[in-house]
Length: 341
Image (tube, one colour):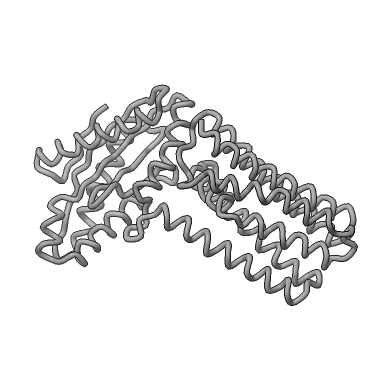
């Protein structure tokens, strides 16, 4: 268990719970449509706090890997936010006008644009397999707040602040996504893949379910670069990334392992199902690349198994086995799938 990450999550939860309480106070001081708005804002913050509760439970079970390059600094920055929220509330007279309430709320929403909140929202998004989209929920929460500034008579300064909040959210979320994505192919990069896969692997282990790993390598890829140029190589990789996204489930994790190698993690699937997915991907790559000046194929190593108590060690062991099976596929003539367990 990462104690620093756990402290970060507990602080995020406490900040959202405090925000919910503040918005609930605003509800008690208003009536009509404005009261409905503050009631909705308070409900949103309670939902956000529950996301952190879920993350805290996963962290306590050791299911969350490294999420921050410098977690100590993130924690120190969050620690400073708590007293600033209390100062914001208690150094002002009781807000009697919508303008004052909106001003306090604007400060609160600025505080919650801290990079840790955005990174964690995006992470919860990536591991959510029940149709929940926390990052989108939060974006809708901000859009609702900004809309309320116009509706309830916010000043021009507050309206500008609202626009800045939305822009900061969008820009920072894009940076978080880019940090974990492979720009060329649109799938996870190596860091993003293992960050997400580790938690999903743990959840599979906890539920006693098997997982599968596919490791794919583009056949004779060096020849594409040498004979056709790196632009042609990039187009081939884009096709491979698009095929993988199209022919895997929302619950599967796809990442670029390095160069022309890609990884897929599939949970809760039978060995026959894994074989079918791998063959579907292999055939789709062959078909989709046929229009290129130099078509290409892939060799795939596929392995299934259940994870033991050391989830991280066992997951990397499956990747190593899939890698060996991929080389076996190449040795047996390429453009084929080799299965193992």
